[in-house]
Length: 131
Image (cartoon, rainbow, N blue to C red; front, side, top):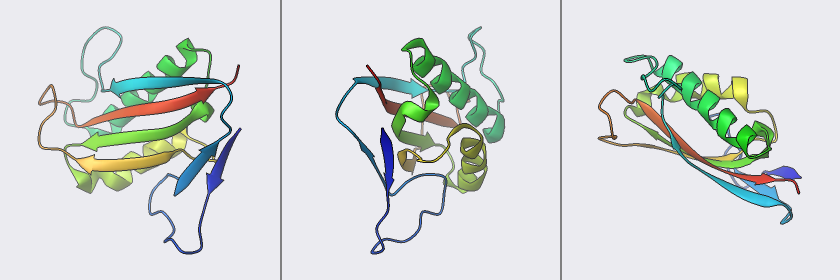
């Protein structure tokens, strides 16, 4: 069972994530590699459009966790790499369509390069799947 942890000593998150997420240590851990906006056919979705790319990345995360027998609700942590941190609000708007409370813990950082110069976002994730 995933539980969102909040502390009155910390500022309220300014995006769609938890300050901390606690998971009971039962089940199977799933480590999802960095997902990009690459579609099933190998093409890059939404070149130049961070909203479309974020949607494809979230769809890819969903496909990976479901292939392991879980759901997006099982994801407890995401690490988000972006080419432009100014896209923060657009990315979190899309994430809100995919992730429900209790939200995963999250880190977002801006990076100078990715494997393809057309990628605007990459997200890796950790999930705990029920037995």
